[in-house]
Image (spheres, rainbow, N blue to C red):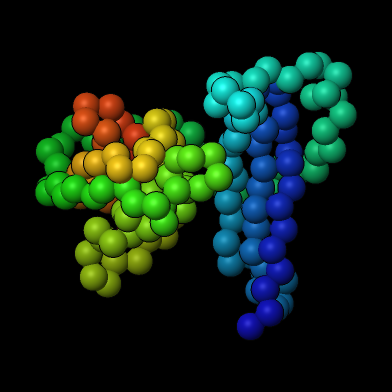
Length: 166
């Protein structure tokens, strides 16, 4: 199947940029819709970098595409984890920023979903990056309308992933 992938920036602030990524099928119908927020970071320090108003004004922006823009903060239900497991971050998980690549957090969570579960929607909230040799604690919460996977570094939440039930 021939797919078309588009990515476009729809909003920029001095600290953050927001973009849509859509994948369209051969008939031009969207089969994947997403939006994401990225922070501007100084590569040498790894700390947030505030852009000048002039630089922000020069970013090319496209219209915000039609999709469900849910809140970027994920609120966990007040239930206990169904189970937990451990994962040690290995070299293959690390990206050029020297922390675990974002796709690997999702890959780990997908492995914990029940057989036959096909999420209708997924949302990810990144909080603290995992680094080489870190041990992630993965907690699985099964709520009425979603399955949540919380990936922790000790007591600190690294990532929360919500899989909406179909």
